Length: 276
Image (cartoon, rainbow, N blue to C red):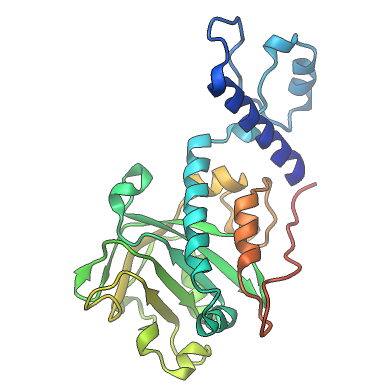
């Protein structure tokens, strides 16, 4: 079913590109109507219409603008992960982590759609097999004594206690009052990097005198609009199990680019199961 939905989505994008490229605005073409791809009766009726009156099948009326924003975020996350591929220590930390939470622009609130302060994604590591990313919105954050203003932030989730916070559907904040032991990468001890110490190891690329001293992120919440647009569901259990309605090549490639649990190489045998 995911493959069918992906083919449908590609046809929608192709149809949109043709229109944008210079379709005759005076042509008597019926406006596209979103229909549910699971409604066989509607599809059968559409197939009998003349070619110039065919309905464009949109998978559950996907918000294409929201999908474009989500894909842009995934591209930025991929660029952040790509920075670590030549750093053996960072790759080893990723392999040992239960998951990673990546915020490619920590504090660029004016550039985030819908007025949000920031956005990030979480990927879960299951013995070297990485999930596809779950999308989150952020309400605010700081680095040391100053508000965050740009640069990437990566939170390495080192144990199940910290992972439970991210997998929760409720809004929460990563602050000293949360009860999680968060250390910065530069101050981390060997036990923190091996999963036997800190709950979260934080790495920041923002720079500045206080950028790697203390990290806080407030109002972390699931971005239901992005998850729905990308996967056709807001159920994080299915997203993290790679068991969703739609296939998105960008998110699959991101998951496949993550390091495996082996001493060398990239995550292998990544499963992309789905309905149907």
